[in-house]
Structure formats: structure tokens, C-alpha cells
Amino acid sequence: SDPDLVARARAAKAALGDRLFVLGHHYQRDEVIEFADVTGDSFKLAKEAAARPDAEYVVFCGVHFMAESADILTADTQTVVLPDLAAGCSMADMAAIDQVRECWDELTEAGVADATVPVTYMNSSAAIKAFTGEHGGTICTSSNARTALTWALEQAGDGGKVLFLPDQHLGRNTYVRDLGGSLDGCVVWDPHKPQGGLTAAQLRDATMILWRGHCSVHGRFSVEAVEAARREVPGVKVIVHPECRHEVVELADEVGSTERIIATVAAAPPGTAWAVGTELNLVRRLAARFPEQRILFLEKNVCYCSTMNRIDLPHLVWALESLVDGRVVNPIRVDEGTAHWARVALDRMLALPG
Ligand code: 13P
Ligand code: SF4
Image 1 (cartoon, protein in one colour):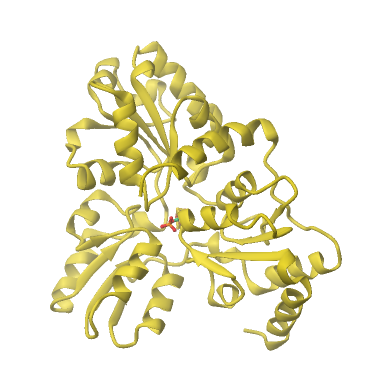
Image 2: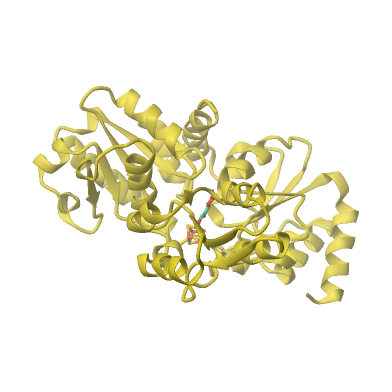
């Protein structure tokens, strides 16, 4: 990276001292991750944001929903900054609050809403998190989806159901792979069709109502790529993120959040070969960090998460130098009405065991 920008980022960080805390998601570029005080998956970063009450500014190098969650979990006196407001998440954009309200109305009409608990993936807007809090549900991330789903199914009781949104793959993978549920117990709610494209009987019979959303990056890892890796690299271990399609997850040796992928690779003996199915910045860093292992990218045709990549060193320097000058650029502020109920849902997640 540009040495001038590196020097400016260092100087701005030094000038701000303890007033600043920089969080970096594992999918961030190397040039940005270098300046993160803490790196993590979305669960760890949410906890870290909540654990820094003394930092006046929390600069979030990640995507919009993560910065919103950080704003909800930090004190009113703290300001969360997202260095580029265009860093969104295409999966989070697949569920709009009006569509979710409409879905709930239709579940009510079909007579199943009373028996349904919403479980909302962190990758969602603050408004949907608030809806979840108001309707007795919880947030989950890929590292606690199993615990969150177990909790929600217990809350729902006998014959109860979970509305899982917006990632159908994480919902299905968690229910089937982690909890031993059956694929037949899952239906997919399509927000673009009347009554989600489902009959009242299908809704009554289902245990998991999965929102039709997915990650455009992880959705591209294929069964063929897993088979090719196994063919080409004898003894290779396949490790993927649970946002991958169910057929891919079923074939993998290991499945986990970004933090878990790193921990699993770190614990493996030298000489282990891995085909990794997650975002490319992280896979490249794994390869650099563990040269004694063989780290391969699972699918040649998959690229970076374009929105994560929006946060680059020029944007970070701009955000930091503005703070040094006493100007806050790109603050992320969730209105208090929304934040209240979203916090209820996030606190339910933070209180889950383990
Ligand atoms: P993690 O919670 O595993 O970091 O995942 C976040 C994400 O957006 C994956 O695409
Ligand atoms: Fe969203 Fe997928 Fe990018 Fe994660 S990798 S931030 S889910 S688009």
C-alpha cells in the first residue's frame, strides 16, 4: 500500500490515542486490517464494541449492518463511523422491514404467527432486528446460530416454528446439520410472492420458515469445486462458511464462522491441506499466516465481497484525519425507537449460553 497513506493512518491513530477504537472484520483488505485494534467475526466484533465504553469514536471497518449493531450496543456518548457508507451487504438488502411485516401479517392470517419465534441473522437492518426484539425473537451470528435456534425452538414449544431470516442457507444448515432436523421440515418464504409462495398447510406443517435470501459470495461455492479439490489434492480438508449452500456444507469436513475457520486452521498440524470456502481476503491471509500448511481457495470463480472491499486505506485515512480535525464523517446512528427493540434482540443473543 501507499507509504504516504500508511504514515498518515499511523499519525492519525497516534493523535487520537485512546479516544479511538478501530474494529476490523476478517474480510477486510490487508491494508485496512493492519490498523484494526481488534479483528473478529461479527459476533466477536459486536461484543468488542460493547466492551469499549471509554472510546469516543469506534471506527468500524466492516459493513453497514455491523456498524449499526455497534451503534446500538455502544453508549449514546460514543460515535460509530463507517469509513465508506456504500459498504453494505447484498444479503441484508434481501429483506426489507415492510416485507417482514407483511410476512408476519400473513403468518398471522394463516394462524401460525402465535407459534412462531423469529431468529434474525446479524446480517440484517436495525429495523428488522427491532422487529425481532418486539416479537420475542433473537439475533444470531454464524458462530452461535445453533444455540440461538435451539433457544428459539424451545421458546416456540411443541409444534412451534422459527421464522429464520434473511439467510436461508444458514437457517437450513443449522437446523439440518447442527440440530439433526429434517429438510422436509423447512420451507422457503419468497417475499416477492403472495403468502411467500406457500400454502397455509405448508406453513402449518413446517418447523423452519426460511426467508429467501442468500450471500452472493458464498452462494457461488459449488459441489463441483469440492469434488475437484478432493480429486486434485489427496487428503485435502474442506472448510466452509455456513452461508454456503446446503449441498456444499454437507460435503465439507468443517463448517464455521470466520473466527472458527481461523481457529480450526491454526490448530491443524503442519502439512495439512485446506480448501477454504469463504471470502478471498481472509483465505489469502490464512495462506500467508500458515505457510507450513497448504491453503487453497475452494472455487476459482469466486471473488472478494465487493462491499467489504469498499473500505480501503484512502477511506480509512479520510475518516481518521477528519476525526483528528474534530469532524465526524459517516457517523452511523440508529434512532432510539429502533435501537431500543433491536437492543432487546441483541441482548437476548448476548445472554445465550456459551
Ligand atoms: P462471520 O460472522 O462469520 O464473520 O460472517 C459474517 C459475514 O458476513 C459472512 O459473510
Ligand atoms: Fe454480506 Fe456475503 Fe459480503 Fe458477508 S460476504 S458481507 S454476507 S455479501
